[in-house]
Image 1 (tube, rainbow, N blue to C red):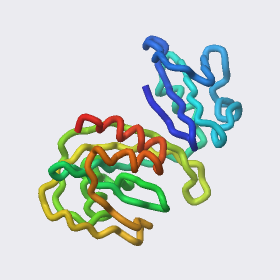
Image 2: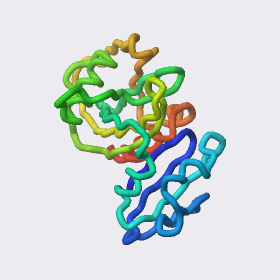
Image 3: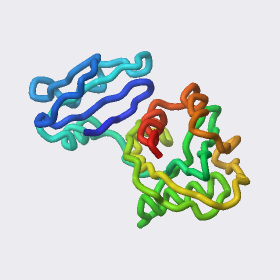
Length: 202
């Protein structure tokens, strides 16, 4: 299954051989009966917290057909833990997790460590495991773009002094305990909430 976050909504892509999750969907798009290329035109993503389900014999093929006109971008980042505290950033007035685009020939786990170091000014976070992958859409240089994000759980034992990367529009970086994650959820993106759910046991 793939989940793609568009504005306030999410599209789930599911193989026809998989069991459909037990949740309510605002729209179920069986691609055997509907034209995949028209999916993005039939739902108002900006005004709904909706959830769409696309069922197809090959969900990756369906995903590629729906987003055939989009530029694809790869990025990586992660949630860093030091003792009982976790590292978050504020960017453009929203809480976020440090992440960034992969450089040429760079592996996702390498990019995750590099971006965290650059955006927060810490050194030497260590990958613990892959939390998961999310997709979200946005406009990049005027072009519709879909970003694939690899998210990692990382451990850290160095100085907790942070230096937010202002040139990346990061206004602050903070360490908070897991009991305070509700503050992050109140002012963040739906895709980041998904990552918080992935990290609930970290």
